[in-house]
Length: 410
Ligand SMILES: *Cc1c(COP(=O)(O)O)cnc(C)c1O
Ligand SMILES: [Zn+2]
View 1 (tube, rainbow, N blue to C red):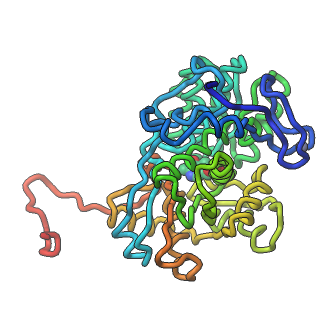
View 2 (cartoon, protein in one colour):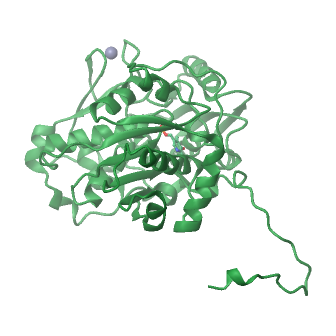
View 3 (spheres, rainbow, N blue to C red):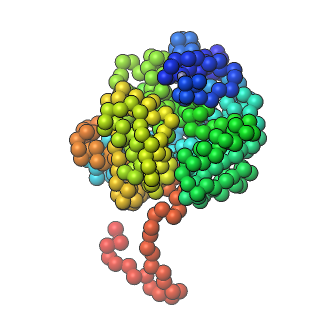
């Protein structure tokens, strides 16, 4: 038994292959590379019951991850987040079988930790000492913190508007942090130039092949947590789309291993905000690639990505699973965030709230049927966005009596 069954890298566009031992970024044709495993051999060597005794983190799937030697694993216990029933919110939406995969409790408070854990570990294995990336905040925070743990230096560039807490996370981890008066695409150009000039390891979204392997573990976990019986629909807040591509890849790998016994894959739904919906636009027109979204804006910062380099992979996953792409109204996102907190006691991030809102809308349109099992990804903690929620609270003077009205006594 090997620790990893990684075989090689390949290009999903032109099918060129690359050796696993060397550092690779994009394919010569410009497309992102994906990791291929020896699934035939793994199917013989590995069974679901082998997982039972393992630790509840994403490394329980190490055979299906790219790190070949356990000594390179850099971990903070990420993964195996709860898959929670949402009965009250489900009743409110007329979706009795609503579940939330809650990434809000993962290290760094956002699911970017998954990609960072696997990506940084693999970088360590490949001998990398300095990495660089543009970010909307959460990825930079996760990568710079995991890099610090792996003793790799990091250079991070983020928009000035990115959530300020992520700025602190990067700076405290000792990253070389810069803010740009612009979008993540502007940050990307600056990082690209620095990478050329200074020979840094570029970990921009999908420009290194291993982040997606970390994110795919969300799909592995959902399947395992449902006892290898897939849900009908999975909704995902889509920026770069790495999580959605990853979940699709995970489910295909499980199919190849024979762990899903002829089940249909869940319909995958890409959720975006109306202020930045390139994937939705492409899907509506039946296109296989998206067009750069000008002047994009949304307070769900993690999904403010005007052009995803893996857009063709996102759209492919949607078409293949008979899923869809949907944009939600900006103003309604915070209303939904409030509803989730009131009905279920969970303070989800705006991206997660957008995704619940999408489930609500798709149920109203009857695209999701009442009896279907639906998994919503909450990709991060609401507490990472302290300035997003607006609240009004009375301030009293010492000695005042509380102006309670009777409706507060249950
Ligand atoms: C990055 C991010 C997303 C979008 O993830 P992709 O996989 O790049 O589409 C969604 N939610 C949060 C909280 C994020 O940080
Ligand atoms: Zn190619």
